[in-house]
Image (cartoon, rainbow, N blue to C red; front, top):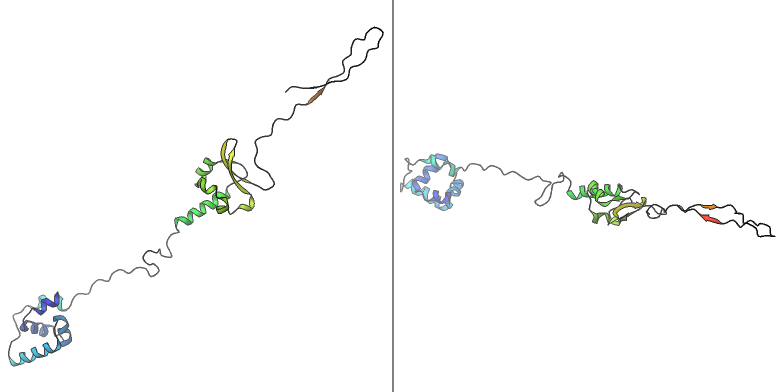
Length: 205
């Protein structure tokens, strides 16, 4: 657009710009959209007096067209980051922090049953994750993670091999056996009294 504006000037005005700004032929051709042959022919016509340099032409208005101001440099992106990729010094992804949380949760599982709702609220992991102990448990050598009902409540605990499953409290011990001393019987006439055989009674609880 700027070249077209300069190209629309008369030869007298063009040579006024060339003379004012001392433009070399190459720069004059580039800024005004001229061919070298055209500029050479115009110079010959100027010498022959075919036209004159326009001394009344205000060349100051065309300074920025002849010498365009330098454009401000655009900010460059960091060399270690490309579009769509985080830089190497970016904060860790959420996935990494979540993985640490899961690992810590499994480390916190003990041999004592804990209600699932309480465990999830404390450690921030889901029931689905707790059921996938083979995938997430890094402490499996300390026992197998169980997610089952204990005393009617869905709970989680670690079962150590050889210790057996967690069972409810043992039933009360059987009532002790109490011996009853022999009871004498009244003998019939002519017979001696015999001691009866001791009978064992079971005490009621």
